[in-house]
Image (cartoon, rainbow, N blue to C red; front, side, top):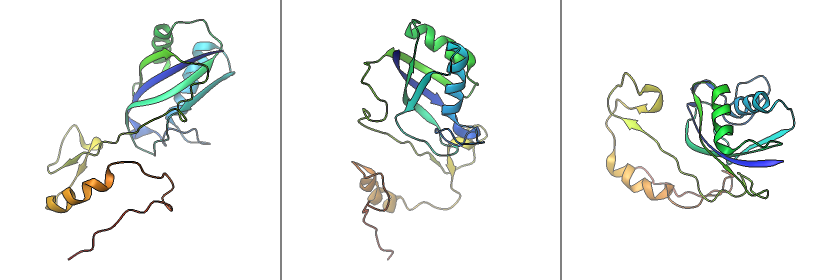
Length: 165
């Protein structure tokens, strides 16, 4: 079995997140479907570094693919992209160590939140349009709360809250 590290970008607007879900369209489901066509097998594994929620996009989601093939990484990328829908794109494929696991070897995650003060014709689904005045000072004070390590279980995370004056 060969193992490949994949780096993908996708527009999550049409998907119920990364993870395969029964009777829902997912990004992982599209990748698995494309891989089954390319490699003509059901015997393959795909794992993502993390799970995105419904409608969330990714600029560089890391995943790994384990499959029996002799194809080079560049051919794997080309063939998978030929089978993937227009809103899922594999940016890079490289051979991975057999012990590599996209989820367990991830060392960081970055998130981008785009807030717009005006309506946009083209970027509407990629930003949050706020018509009201923004409290920039409060936003600046809250920024440090988003920096650093966090426990993924929300019930264990203790984020201090600022009382309203």
